[in-house]
Image 1 (spheres, rainbow, N blue to C red):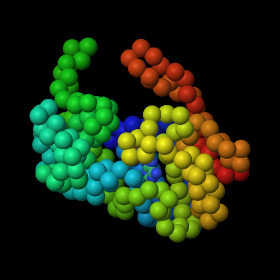
Image 2 (cartoon, rainbow, N blue to C red):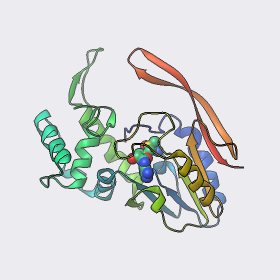
Image 3 (cartoon, protein in one colour):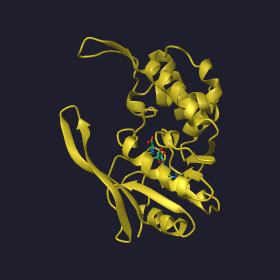
Length: 242
Ligand SMILES: C[S@@+](CC[C@H](N)C(=O)[O-])C[C@H]1O[C@@H](n2cnc3c(N)ncnc32)[C@H](O)[C@@H]1O
């Protein structure tokens, strides 16, 4: 699913690394506490897969993937606004999974009611695109790879006792645009949580930088688009405790 901070651009590099740790583990249990668009977990095979995120509408959507056929084929701006108003006012007209679907699939760049309405667009190259229909089709195709995952809405710190798991963390990056549900993410507390979890699990973390007791096991330079005219180099890295 198109998602802010998606790892789809580097998935071909990091999925084989993560998969190898799962294959080498005894249990073959895999957990993602910041699953977002599920653009990593959908590439990982494991005996059991668990995913969580603090975004309640996102998790409700994953928990109701069997209802995707009930979604409209086209979302008008009026309907988008109606669902967004329901979300903003905490109304009851729409179920959470439906708010998640319209919010993520019909907002520009998958930015839940933040990127603005992404309806029909006549592109510079002269092509008409329906971004919502494309996003819906993508999620329908992705759903096959999400089958069997146990989804839960929670803060990563609420994750229960785990032991012998492979845990892949893709938290909000330090110094980047923040997610609506997690303003002021506490990065120090996060790394401490990783240290604790690493005592009984194999924990891998995506970030640009990490504290000195973590080692970088993979890195690659990419260009991040700031706006239409500006692209800056960034380095994607994968860390583990030393
Ligand atoms: C970088 S995105 C994950 C992207 C995902 N790996 C992908 O490729 O689509 C980070 C996610 O962390 C979630 N998040 C932020 N703070 C959180 C917290 N305290 N606990 C759990 N999830 C949180 C956000 O809702 C967001 O979905």
